[in-house]
Length: 197
Image (cartoon, rainbow, N blue to C red; front, side):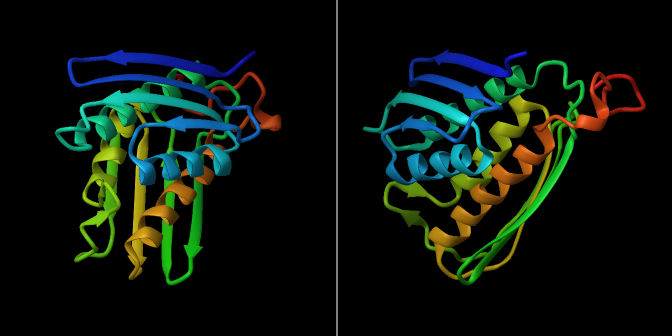
């Protein structure tokens, strides 16, 4: 069974297309108009081994907020769609990723219950190119709300804003990959004692 999600989202502020294949090889085609965000979404696809297409046209003449947020919402919805009934997956995943002086720890539960815990160093540089660094938490909030997952992201230390954000996306990619992969010992089994996820 193909585990593919496709979401188109159109508002007065943005037009977004997201396609994701959870069983891909990490091929990406990303274009949001926000260079650093494109770089982060590329990390998500490549390190998650998800084939990922993201095409966003947004009101960048205002700022990047709507573009970044709406892309994250569509990505979360596409991820949820691709997961399908969740039968036979591992469900839980975690990964710790260093990037030079920075470290990110990510744990995920594909639970059907959206919840985010997010910590990162204070007093980061406010911008990376056109990317507002306060948007990282908002991206995760938006993704979690639509994907309906529990996500804990912790960056205990780091100095360089680029590194701090990037190691979060890399660790997120790996944690999502591990959680969404099929467990050969659990074929046909839903990983929940409740009988629903």
